[in-house]
Each structure stands twice: as C-alpha cells, then as structure tokens.
Amino acid sequence: MPVVRWRLADFLEQRQLTAYALSKVSGIHRMSTIYRIARRGDEPVRVDLPTLAAIVSGLRLLTNEDVQLTDVLEYVADESGEKRETAMPSMVSDEQITVDTALEHLRQLNLTATQLAAVLRELQAH
Image (cartoon, rainbow, N blue to C red; front, side, top):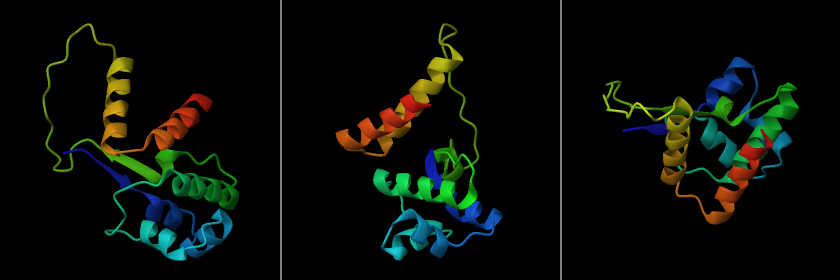
C-alpha cells in the first residue's frame, strides 16, 4: 500500500541542524511537535498544513535553500517493495498519470476544504 512519510529527520541530519533550532525559527511554540515529526519511526501520519508550511519556511530560513515539500515528505508507491503491474490505456499521457497519482494521494490525506485550497494555491505558485 502506498504511503507518504516524513523525511525531516534525514533533512536535519544531512545539514547538521537540530529540531530545537527548527522549532525556534519556525515559530512553532510546541517543541514536541517538531521533535515528534523529526523522530524516526514514530512520525505522525496526518499532516497539518499550517505546521508543514511553518516547517518548510523555517528550513528555508535555517539553510538559505529553496526547500520544497518533497524535501521533507516522501511518497513510497509500495512499502512492501513489490511492484504492481497495472494495465494503462495507451492514450493516457505520463502527465495525466502523474496528476491522477497526486490527486489520489491528496484524497488519502483527508484534508479539509480549506487545507486543500491552501495546497492548490501552493501548487499554482510553482
């Protein structure tokens, strides 16, 4: 079954940053929120979009890099490592498959209408 996972712990480790520093610069006052997301193996499975936005903004400030959602989140098509063969109609473009896949992942996040609108605005900005 496909999953979306946090990569924050890896991101912080690669850049020798701490969850504490991220918590301070991101404006997230509940440090336990950042610590939980940055802890391998016990990351939250739901995404709060304002928290996600604060994390990305904080990482941009800390690193002076153009940090994107894909730097802190990872999509794994099949956690078991098995490849599933699916018949795709030849008239479906690669771009449409990508859009369909993205829409399916958004559905699985159970976002509110407001959260989904924020994600769409972010996508339109890029």
